[in-house]
Amino acid sequence: MFERISNGFALARSSWAVLLRDKHLLIFPVVSGILFLLILASFAIPLAVLVDWQQVGQQANNRHVPWWTYVVAFAFYFCTYFVATFCNAALISCTLLRFNGETPTVGDGFRMAFARLPQIFAWAFVSATVGVLLKAVEQIHEKVGDLIASLLGTAWSIMTFFVVPVLVVEKVGPIEAVKRSLQLLRKTWGEALVGRAGIGLFLFLLAIPVFLVFAGGVVLLATGHVPFGIALLVAGGVLLLMYSAVSSALHTILIASLYQYAADDRVPEGFDRESFSSAFGRA
Image (cartoon, rainbow, N blue to C red; front, side, top):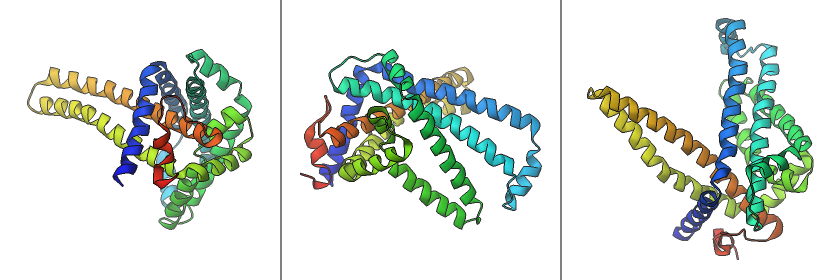
């Protein structure tokens, strides 16, 4: 068990080293976050003004959701999945270029993502459809529907673990991308599980200073030191945004490294083969 934890943490440190060497990779999750907020505002503001949410809430309590909510949900899911997939595709493109000894730029990432627009568009459509179907399943029964939707959502996230790098590198459609993702996941499920656990532990350690800054701000406000408390809370907010970008980038770098290892049996530059091959006792 200790060896597995050590291997997972080693994968996290290697992903962190890649991010430190190419700090501009953080631009992609930052752009994704900004675009998500814009999409959220573009949906939330009209809905807040035009919709009688008290009536919708009463219908939702009776498990009778208006039909138009599914149309709006599909449009929202499609936009958010498109943005997230596009930015992740750009980040993965740059990461894979770095793994192959090149020096990628932000422009390289966006250029390669634009070259995959048909695949990204199709994947966003499929993802939005699945998202709406899961929401519909939730309406079947108050508890059973939620449980089934949660299980199906978890299974879907596992099945699609490698979809974005497959779309970027292999240029296939969404159905073939899911099949290929499952094929690669069967080869590297141990490494994927250990790597994600390692990233989780690494991010937990990174989150401690952010928590301490927020806690310090709350304590200062409670003790009457308002200006210093507000300053710390603002600093904590900035750190939290940075933490979110780092978290997203590290997960994407890990996926790119696992993809290269699974698809080409090549250990990416900066990673240790033993950290991959010894996960879950694999030879």
